[in-house]
Amino acid sequence: MSSAPVLISEKASDALRVATVNVNGIRAAYRRGMQEWLADRDVDILCLQEVRAPDTVVRDLLGDSWYILHSEAAAKGRAGVAVASRLEPTSTREHIGDEYFATAGRWVEADFEVAGTTLTVVSAYVHSGEAGSPQQEDKYRFLELMSSRLSELRSTRDHALVVGDLNVGHTTRDIKNWKGNLKKAGFLPEERAYFDHFFSDAVGWVDVHRDLAGDVDGPYTWWSWRGKAFDNDAGWRIDYQLATPELAAAALSAVVDRAPSWESRFSDHAPLVVDYKLHESQD
Image (cartoon, rainbow, N blue to C red; front, top):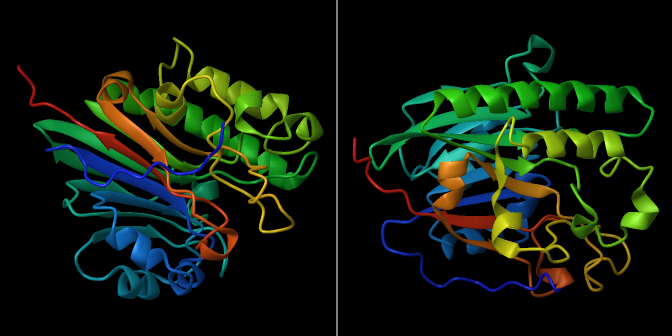
């Protein structure tokens, strides 16, 4: 199945539109046309990863019409995650809870009141890793913390949504060349086992994009800048929207905003845009 976009011109009445994208440096993304994409998409909550810019730059680029939560990485020019919203958050948190990752710029949480319920939205950027390296050990440590936090969020929130570049292809449907990546970070059995756990009955989260797309190849969200990966749709599906079951059931549509050409991309990732329609609680 091709990952070519099927853009939605209008969102449903009262729908909440959540978009996530690894911008691969927000300054470069804006130079390549991110602003034009964003202006056309009527996004309510925008989650960004690999922002790689100071907070003042992020706020200047996005403008003053957004409430912005941004966790800048201590390492200059690395990582960085943000949640920008048209709704004002009721509470925010800037890291996953382990001091080891406190300045890593990989996890932010924002709480919102939507349709009389509490919705927590997380923008997450999991390490890319490298098999057998210290970076891979950090990746496993982060995924372990993520597993615990997912359980906490499900048990303490009406609805929760964890989105972002999670840097793991869960199944063979998620990577075009999966056979050539069985021993590489991003498709290691140990990494994929965490996602099995996330979607198990014990933890109970839902891969919204996969749930709506069905059992098809992709639709992919990342393609290397190099060679003909984009033109040949030799991609990876590593950008996710993970939702608690009740929220997943409220998802109306999921679209990958794949650029029409290699030259028109503003990042090596494409935005993943999901519309949700939550109803007022009857309690």
